[in-house]
Amino acid sequence: MPDMIGSPEIDGFVFKQQLMCSARCTLWRAEQTVLERDVLIAVFGEEVLQNAGIGDALFGVVRTLAQHRSCLIPDIIDVIRSEHQAYVVLEDCHAQNILHLLNGHRLRVEPMLQIATALATGFAELQSAHLVYGGLRPKSLYISEDSEPVLPDLSVVTFEPGVGINPPVETLVGSAPYVAPEQYQAPGTVDTRADMFALGMTLYALVTGQVPFGALSPDEILQQKLKASIPSPCDMAPHFPDTVAAVLAKLAHRDAAKRYADWDEVLFDLHQASHGIMPNGEIYPGSVIAPPNPEAYPKPGRTIRLSVEDLRLYRQRHQKQNRAWVGSLLFWLGITLLLLFGILAVLAKEVLS
Image (cartoon, rainbow, N blue to C red):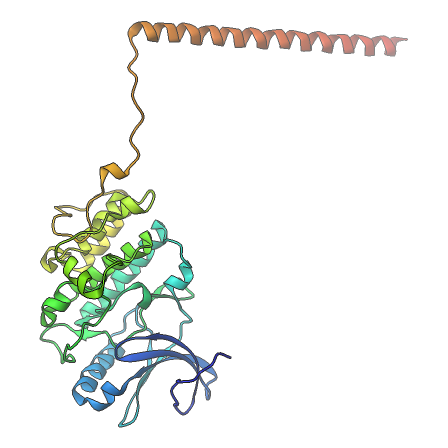
């Protein structure tokens, strides 16, 4: 049993493992002793307990999530909020973080497309409930036993503008390489297109094995994101399809208005790209992801043009080789037949004698 110093104390639960820690909550795997089952518990911190406005906003989102199920969010079993405790009990699908599963390897194209399709489907369900996830990154992405993506961190989910009450934005929610520019430029305008940006950047990191702008500080990343581009995944991952790279680039456009209009368009282009079909329209101008660099690809071998005389000599040489091969075959066939007849003659002589 791992050392559980610092784990919460909640009646009826035995805490086993801390899965993640975000700005406003810590996610644990625990055993619900009465029912003898594993569950996930999102335990909210002092900020939520002490600030009624933040608590009301976060638990308003949680209640909406409980009413409008998304395939990305584990089923909500119970919601507890009191003066001294604030936590949410979720179904445990025994998911593992995708970085742990990859164990330092890059994500291959086929499973990437499957995960991207499932994420886009789940984000469409969140959009139908007027919710924005807002915190997608590799460390927040888990894969269930059924190979389906799971996003168990509830603390980053917010309402779309004008729908519900969101907690005040004092610090940037999410990780700098993956958040959309509008999340720190105009947080009051953030909608589902921020999840599109995070999806493009997260998939980029998983297939290339590189954190976008990873060598820079968070503040430098946020500034570079407005003016610089990162290399195409085609330049970094062998045999990565340029059609899929184009979808990632459109997802990761700096201007939210130039990303996809809705998740149905994302799903359509993912399907088309998997069959080698490029998305319509201009893709790369304004995207954080650069177009493929032709210099990064192996150049074709030098082409030698043959003259008519060269071709005639080649045909003659080829015909001579064919005739020599046929002659050799006939010679050895004759030898084999002679040997066979000799053996038959000896056998016949033995029988007659």
